[in-house]
Every structure is written in structure tokens, then in C-alpha cells.
Length: 74
Image 1 (spheres, rainbow, N blue to C red):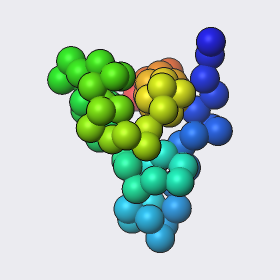
Image 2: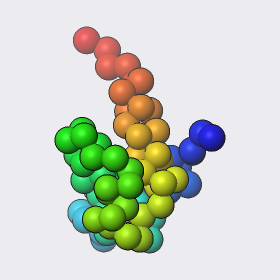
Image 3: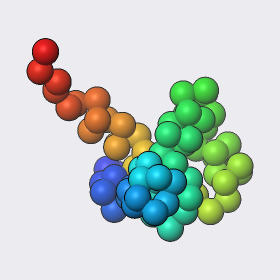
């Protein structure tokens, strides 16, 4: 089931200095991506952060995918 990151990832200059974070939390997307990059499963991340849902974790990956597709002109 595809997850639309725009429903879960927000940025507000008053929260975490504008870093993208999961809506309704102070958990930055970069933190979740770091856990995933270190080999943690979604279940392990949710055990560490019980308020997170599988959809939010998937949204972090979808957000990263969108950023990776952004083409930079040289």
C-alpha cells in the first residue's frame, strides 16, 4: 500500500528549526531514516518510539525517495 509522505511529514520553523518531522511529533525524518539505514526494522523503531505507526515510517522512506529523484543541474 503506497503511503503519501505529504500526509505525514511536515516542516515548521518553530519546531526543530524547520527540519522535516513527523506530524504531531518532534521526531525528525532524518532520525527514522538513520535507524533504517542502521538496519533496524519498522518494529524495532516502533518499540523505541511507541507513538510511531508503520505508515509514518513508510512516509519517511517515501519522502527520501522523492528527494533522491530531485535532479540537480550541474
